[in-house]
Length: 141
Image (cartoon, rainbow, N blue to C red; front, side, top):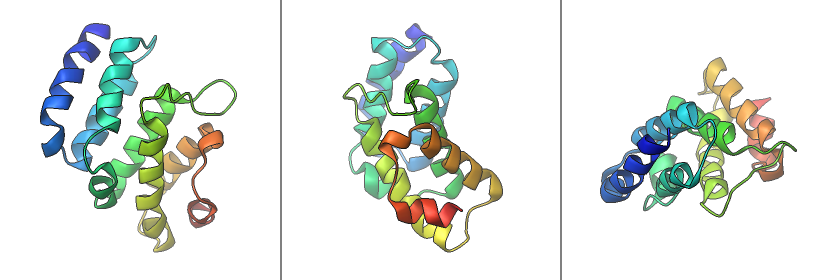
């Protein structure tokens, strides 16, 4: 996993300005899937995603599935054993806040599929120390 993460960090940083929300979600999901036994290379690659320019704007127009996948990946990779978020200073909390902000109006409008609701609820429950605004939680229930 470390060689892949080491290769991804500069690649993500280089193409960050052209990454769409779906790209960010796909890369984050892949990192979370291979990220067992994380190290600095993994954190560097995930941090490069969290530092994508205009992350909130990009995520704000994401399709619900990308939002759900991004939240799942961040929580799977960085939830700590006490139900909080182990941010490590790389911006995971910022990424989750952007997902929460983009998901709230979709949840309130009933535009999320059950799988997306489940993934978002699981992600934010798993990282409850970094819980989103109560408005999203209410909309998901």
